[in-house]
Image 1 (cartoon, rainbow, N blue to C red):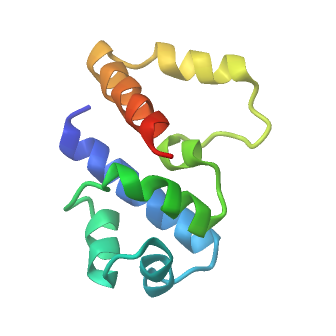
Image 2 (tube, rainbow, N blue to C red):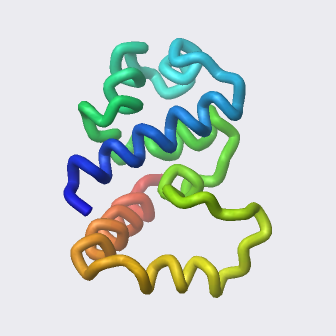
Length: 109
């Protein structure tokens, strides 16, 4: 997966979660502290989401952070082993991107 594809996938997922939460782009922007246009850019994959905004997005959408990164249709009651299987299907470059992202998220307090 190329980085631009990753941005598109995350943007698509963000939009899905926002619509599920019945929140407008304006409401999400207000909750995260950005312009509405920024949310639009994120959802269209034009701009990456700043790491420091990810916890605010998750809080505003009332979802755990990992939900932003689940690009496949995964059932709510998926066991941990299913996540391991999903990770095993990823390339080493995709895993590197994911692990770096997790490391950066852990730094955010």
